Every structure is written in C-alpha cells, then in structure tokens.
Length: 326
Ligand SMILES: [Cu+2]
Image (tube, rainbow, N blue to C red; front, side, top):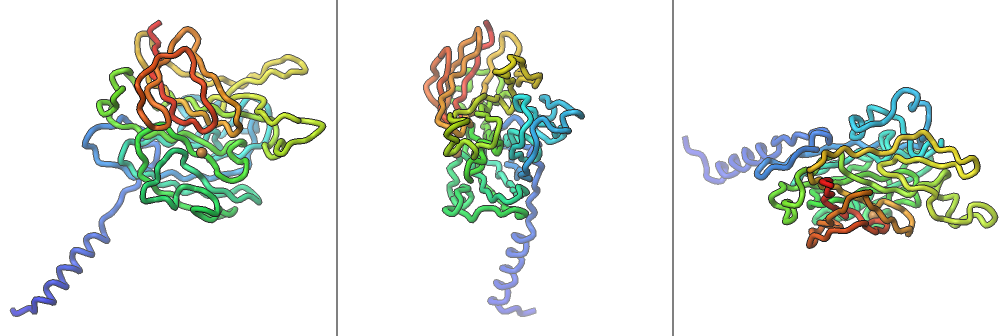
C-alpha cells in the first residue's frame, strides 16, 4: 500500500509523542528516599505532603505517646514536647521540626504545602538549595511566588545539590514559632572528598538547633517596653527538644532531651543546622570529644579538628565527623 511520506512522518511523531506522554513517573513517599546512596542507582521522585497548623506543644497528644527515634520521620506520634512549657506553635504535620527531608543526589523532591493556619499566609524557603532552573520555587513571598493563602496548597519541586540544608517559612516570624525542618542531600560516600573521615552517616544524626520562646515571636518584635524587653530566645532546642528551668521555682521540666546513639570506636558524620531566627550565636561542643569539621553550607572544606563550633542563624550544614573513640 502506498502511504505518503508526510503522513508517515506525522504518524511516527504521534507515536513518539504519545509514548512520551504516557511515560509514568512514580512518586514514592518521602520516607522511602531516606536511604544509603549508591552510584548508578536511578533517582527517586520523593513526595512529601506538609500541612501547616496552629497546634499546641505539650498538648493532649502527649498523654498518648512520647516522641522517640522511631517516629521522628513520620507523624505517628503527634505530641510535640519542646522544652515542656505548654504553648501554641506553628507545626508541620503536627511535628516540630517538620518532616525530615533526606534524599540522595539527583532525586527530585516534590513538596505539597497546604496552609491550614487560620488567618495566616506563608511560603516555604529551601535554605541553601541553588534552585537552578527552578528559581520560582525558592519560596520568597511576593518575589518568586504569591504567598500560600489559608486553605490552599502550593507544590514545590526541585532537584537539590548534595549538602546539609534546612527549610523554613519565609513569612513574618513564623520560622521562630516552629516552621522549619531538615533538608539533607546525600551522595555516595566515595564521592565525598572527606568521606574517609567517617564510618557512618545515619539519618538520625542530624542536629537542628532552634531558639525558643514561651510566647509567639511576634509578641517580642518590636518588643514590649515594660515587660519582655529582650528579643533573645529564652531557650535552645535540639530537634525540637530540650528542658527548661523555671527561674522562679528552680524546677526542671520533665520533657525529654534529644538522644543520639553512638558506639565506641566508630566515627560518625553529624549534620548540624543552626535554624535560629535571631542573630544570637551558638557554640556547640561535645563533652569529652573533639569534632572534625568537614563541610559548611553544602561545601566541603579542608578538615579541621576543633573543640567547639560557633555558628549563626542560617548556617546550615556545618557538618562534622565526630570522633567517638575516646
Ligand atoms: Cu533561610
């Protein structure tokens, strides 16, 4: 049968076009992307759904469960302890910090952010991520996007570069009141020029430091003249946990500290994030151990062994291999 050449080309185009269109992309729940990264492994499409809410720290959910390492990546336990002082905060999926994003190099991260905070708009900023080609997902309100209005959802998509980062709300002072979380992008260990300095790089070994107040941050900015004059945080939390000593009575709250498990003789990579929202510097040290700084802000550095690390707000990814052999 004679078929005109043009028609043949057209038919071929349709077949090719159709096969492109029907190519399916499989989204996997974000927790499945927290894995050891291997060379040559196909990238994953990692999906996260964030629901932001006005929620209570030390609320009724804490009668049911206590957060531990097993539920830190999902919202199985909806108790937020902070430093044991009951207050309202902004939560993501009833967690603080929010869900831990931990993926491998070349993975695509897809986050639907649904804003359920009454009367508040917000955007989410992915701190340190270059957003090459996806600059409109940088999360700067009225610059790269319109803020997410209450009751609506905005989808962010990006392929982040390797490093230790975090995400936080970029609207008002919301990040001071709970809207932040880890954003870790691993690569195969042999690709890390400092990879020989650590034995293990575990998902649980992320140290996010937040400043904390016992009221909403907006109450202290610009600040009251006769009460609460200082704008510094009154406490520091590690992964949303800490204790508070009541200055009036001297009693200590029974909220849990964050616990990192290590074995003697092993070298661990810890990923530290300074997620403070105020210009207050933080000095971190580990009693009886030294630390070797191997990267900062997603960039590898010449290793340097130190007794303590001083960091400031937004200094994400001061990573170190912690020598636990002593
Ligand atoms: Cu930031």
